[in-house]
Image (cartoon, rainbow over all chains, first blue to last red; front, side, top):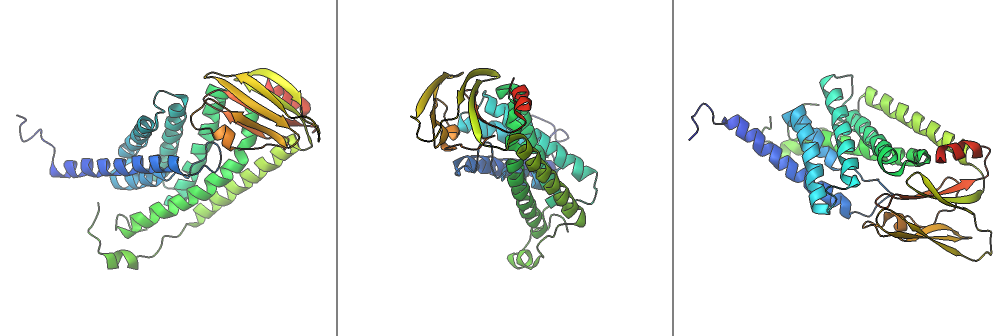
Length: 176
Length: 144
């Protein structure tokens, strides 16, 4: 039986519980997005990134990274894309987006969650294209499709950031 | 950490606003996207002239863009996971059958502008509509 000193504190348990709840929400949003009618190839609204942002504010950088990766793996498991190039694209994009969020959050430069979300959405979309071009299609002409999809990513990134910011503010997580 | 907010408190909170830096970033991003659109337009303007079909980076076939009134043509291409069928008609180019699960390539519909592209990721098939712009050599180089 573990000694009392080795057992996690109530605070740690609460954090783990919160992380798992957020992961469940992010995975559910990831799956929900796959059911939505597609606005175009490789374009999704990125609703799960709202949860990554909230996790970043609530639980910190490591938790946000872990959540971004875990929800992609869980989503891949349920969508049947595990061990396919789709998972590689999703994982790379989610990690780049999470990295951008973490860097901009830890080194504040005047951006709110809205700006952080916008930058992450752009990073996510560009990474998708780079991975697809480098690993799967090998067609630089693919980048001709990038501008309209970046425009969509800008809109959704801004909206997602506003939603995350509203949630964070309204539950009293951080005065904004 | 999370406090215990009441419904009244939640509704009374002001909606968050973007900062001037957010708006500056937005402007920068929109300018970059505008420049991207302009660059693509410069590369690909003009009437569609040719349809090129690739498997990965290998050119599988190159076909003249169908003239109005011409007989529609169906082209079968072997990809990584099976055979794809591409239709060429005067209305445009479209993927009519593909072995992938998502069928996004089929749902993307007809493509009839130069620079349009159909991509089937699982099958690694891409179809590019090439125009008569002055950047043909550049596109040829890109497509190698």
